[in-house]
Amino acid sequence: MKDLRPSSQPEAQLCEAGEDDVEILFELFAATRNDLIAAIPNLDAAQKENFLRVQFQAQRDQYLAQFTSAQWDLIVSQGRIIGQILVAPIGDEIRLVDVSLLPEFRNRGIGGALLEDLLDRAASENRCVSLHVLPDNPAIHLYRRLGFVHAGVQGVHQRMEWRPAAADAVSADPAGLRQKVN
Image (tube, rainbow, N blue to C red):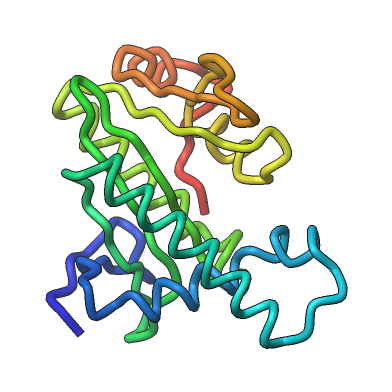
């Protein structure tokens, strides 16, 4: 495995994804996209895999074309690749393009800690963090707890933003909107 970088979450490290990681990125995509399979019932295993590969390649091609300066990292826990995160600097903001964890690693504080690391980086650079999320995605609750706010609609996605100035207000907020997520 490539050079691992620590995160604030002891259970997770990051390493840069490379061209030799395309198959593991596909496996992560397939393991986290039950919504796609559910949308097209009655496919046999080969048809499901082919459908997912086409969807994965289309998404990957779009990300690589649209976010040329993006940092694509694998999320690693105890030597096992458990997820991926794609972050792109765009002008005065940092875009959280994509983040996913294998289902068995969700709700353990890993995603929240990685996002807090991203917010800390953005605050130190005085940059906004933005993302697009489907309105019914359960992760939207995590984003709100971290201080992201609704910033419009783009197609079927909701745009959310976090701003460093908001971080100051959140840290002074007794409700603790940006508490450490465990």
